[in-house]
Amino acid sequence: MSPMKCCLAMVVCLTWTACEVRSDEPIPVGAWFDYHPDQYVVIDSETGLAWPAGEALLPPPYGQILLKGKFHWVTTTGLRDFEATKYASGHTNWRIPTIAELRTARQHGLYEALVEVARLEGYPYPMPVVRFGLFGSWASDVSSSNRRAWVNLLGPLHQEVRWWPTHWGSRPYLPVRETAQPTPILWADDIQEGQRPWGFSGLFTQYDGKAVEPDDANGANISRVPDPAGGPGFAMRHFAVFGPKVGRSQAGIWSFKNPVFAEQAKSEEGVYIAQEWYFPEALSANGRGTPWISLWDWHSVGPNGSNRWHTSPGMFLTKDGSMRFNLKWHSGSTGNPTSALSTIPLPVGRWFDVEMYYKWTTGPTTIKVWIDGELAVEQTVPWTRHPDHNVVETYMKFYGAAPSTTPWSPTPSVRYTRNVRIAADRIGPGGN
Image (cartoon, rainbow, N blue to C red; front, top):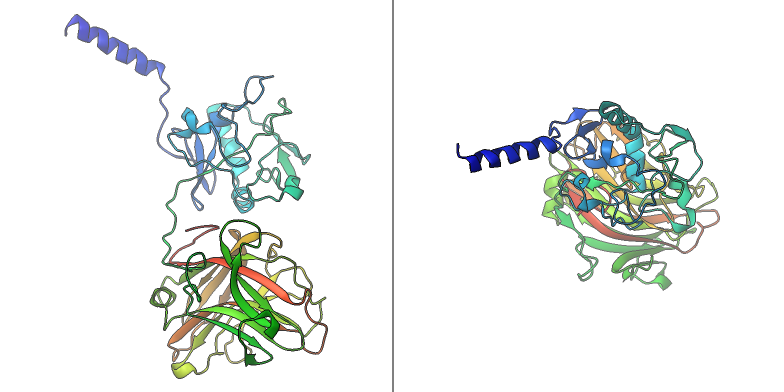
């Protein structure tokens, strides 16, 4: 070997020795998380989210002000200079997690996984303390009027994690990035750019048992309006009077008119449908017995439209103003009981994502409903289809009444819908 080649080889050897070589083999650090040393992250096997771990969470030197440009800086909009460091591993899709993602991470044991990574690498890790409200992780979808309610959801229940107790002014944000490819969307509405009925199989407005022209003056309306929350784009507005007479405004998707929906709903895998809703106010009937509102339902139908009520779950709102709901089935011969109430309410005053898994089958199946990615209702039923049925339908519904009692409050009532989409697998909040 020539002196020059020998010198170059020595330089390369010394350079390689000086560099930190980290394994690319994942290490299990809990039931849901694997640690990836080469990327400085733990990855949730269910959600596919990557969270900084190990060296990426070490505090800066004592007394150092956390200025923009440091690896641990994240702004409230999710923009960060984290991407310019080795901890980013070449990824540029870091963002602030949502409330639902923080809750799921806590349920899956993210705090315990991060502690285990610190133990494996020999780093100290702050212990949880009684919730105080200064340190932890902010969510991206928290209302400005109640920000502190979502601090420290990564810590054990009713406790917070003070990431760096000696840096009182830091308030660091913990980012996430996606590692899984988004679920392909098979069909989506055309509310933003299309013409009525915006991609749906049909729209229907009814009042007092009769079809009416869509107009507020007629007691029921469905129309396209600017985003009621003040953002860009449009939304589908459902308007109805829920009093002694029945009001209804709905958009349907029918298997005999939408081939994509038909194929997926009738498949062995079942169908996932997600949509965004906005309720300006909570709906309440003050707990009275007879009022009812259906927000979303399904129909299994026989030839020529026969026996359409045989298996037909509807998402019915509770009457006490809590905005919880359950799945109710027609009282005929289905054998399917009413589900338990949702574990979480439908949010009010902001857009949120609601997703349902449904399988049209003559055998047992489990229906699931998620709110902002968090499981709210899960019900196993004997069947959702009679063997003679050949049509399945679903409706983005706003349908109800308050017979023989005080109307629902507020009256008239309004709900908005947008971003309805169909897939063969979980879509998740905002998935497209």
